[in-house]
Image (cartoon, rainbow over the protein chains, first blue to last red):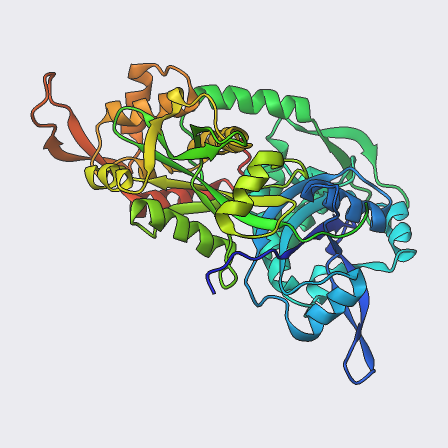
Length: 248
Length: 248
């Protein structure tokens, strides 16, 4: 009852990507073996049990590389999900068979990653059984992965308001329409076009590149870029002026 | 080599308290049994392996209660420390003997807690082998606990600048001197008196109580209090006005 226990430890990664229109999540199609011998595909987050000679961050990088071919990206630990009954029954049997490890309980460290989606990355994952699924299309996931996704989305929303992480998801050159779509997609709200443009253009660190979209049906929009050096300088200055700075 | 492993899983709690003058950390004096039979006292963070029927948050609350008699406080998961060799040799033997559990590796979920220090809390812990040690007096800790403390302190500093968490540490009624001491102590900087008072007094949510200090040698200072409702209302408004609000 009150005895310590050695659980299995896994990492599960919520990998967000933005394709210029909508927010997508990297998911793995799994053929889940039901006890009656039938199988039914379902989706899970990319993840793995941790190995003997790696720490949890290394395990998360390994998982990312396995499915995307990339090792480096914006990544942070999100939360530890550890309810004693989060994985039981058939799910536990599946894990034991898959990893050939004895286990009665699995604790997972959830990670949250942001990648710049490009054609290579979209193609690459197809060869590894992974798929980019639009956030709005995800209705259920294996185990407690829907709950983990919800937690990640909540964190992403908060962080989006407090830090310039939008630019981890956007291509280096982006249109203001894309920036606004990204905010609207993640926060699930509609933003007034004019105010948004005014606010963004009044910042010194979102700068026009001089280039425009090519081969589009509508009037080609200007491309902008995020100047991180300028941003850091500006916020350091603001920081000095407003010593205490409670915003949220 | 590349095999999954079931580690032991623990929680370690960095509990911060502020006694009106300086920042303190709750530590446990441990008699570490050396192989030659000698023993030498050292300090560790309060912690425990997780039990069979609890999740990590519950384990952290249990540890807090064990040493302070309180179960509820400001608490959040900080980070998972999981390097394969973070606990080895004698330290691992100590853990195995203490918990009577077979283990070859221990992963820990570090927590970070803020308590309002009062006389009860200062006395209570003494009966449980725990001690409040001033941050500046902590030079070394068992295992990787110094590293965990540094991580917690870094998080506390960042959060202190972004959110009104100072008031989790301060008593309900506080002087502006105490508020400034708290900021200076945690951030390790000196703040200009006049600017600090001006900034604080210009906020609507730090309000005078009308009461003054009693039985002090110097001129009794006014007590202030933090109005959380007012703060929430103000920041919601600010949030609406400044839709994108990158500050740090």
